[in-house]
Image (cartoon, rainbow over all chains, first blue to last red; front, side, top):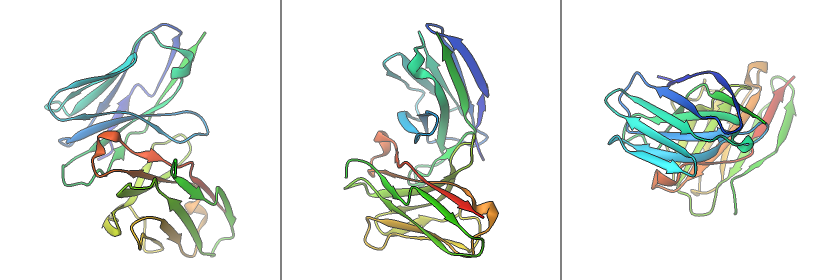
Length: 112
Length: 114
């Protein structure tokens, strides 16, 4: 039931782009994306509801393909501040009350 | 409050002792969630509440774990007869009923069972 994220880790140079994928074996109602810096709490980035919408947040955007039960997070022109571990959290039904199952995380390192 | 507050920040306990972890959610947040996070892993769902009602406790590992939120605000996660395998970061999160704003996580309680 835990969604699978790929890649597990990625190293970028400042200004490069990255894509993080999140796949589920179950039909999804929504997908959340969070970023966690070392020693800190996860911080909410965005939520995508079923409908294939794409959302943006500065240079970070995401898409949700409900048929494929997948979501992707796009980071463009990466900045040093983007470093951290990214988690997707999936909600499998509208009656789940917001209960999220998180993936194992993707560690992103942005180097100067 | 301004954020989700958890206490204590660190807890070291001897095996077999009971511990109570407290979470004070953001004022007005209806939903409250408990997660456990191992180092380098994603948060693992334990249980959640809407108002004072426990909606889902399917993630609680066994009957030594329990949670309550008697007045729909502060919540307590209790672990009885602690074992070394219970050592982890325990995180609380809260959200409005409208989940488009996502969860706000607390700083967590680092539990170490010795």
